[in-house]
Length: 237
Image 1 (cartoon, rainbow, N blue to C red):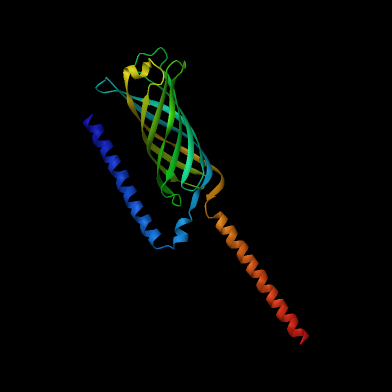
Image 2 (tube, rainbow, N blue to C red):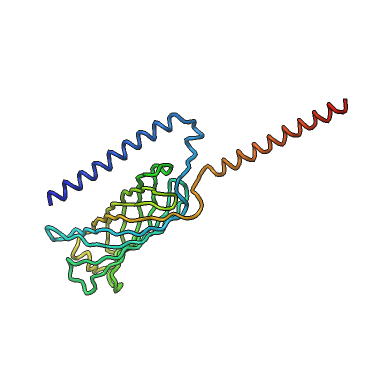
């Protein structure tokens, strides 16, 4: 238990130091830009994504050393801005510590995600949302809330490696929940997987670029008209 706690503390410290360093560098970069350029964000990622992952879940129960249970996950994601996305995922896992008639459980979540540095290949992101934890026979239903920290490492324009750690709080909406009789209301997930991006590039500067392009084209047409008028006037004279 001590060894696991030490490892978790070291991992958390590394992620925290990296996030603080990246945030400081981002603030320095923003300070060197104009206000308009700072508001415009160009993301390297497309608007849509699908990911497949595996991970472990730790339920807090009456056991001194509860076992980690493995799960598989599939997730869909849609960016609404370069920095914010809405995601939905489905997890499937078993619970060996508890005597359930049906050991299998399903978990479905909907989250709002905030990408800190979408213009970089490697970025942390934070997420929070609501979900449902339900047994395979649909007799044990538990609503929950969750929040966590994720990492996104872009390998190419359409492929990346993702990982996340989150805490989940479950509360008994249906009286007599078998899960909450055996486990506390808090459990943890750790996930690693691959993600595929598809669709158009997510760019908040597209409208500004189109407007700038249109203005430039109009200016060019006006200059051409003035040159033609001067040339015709010179020929007549």
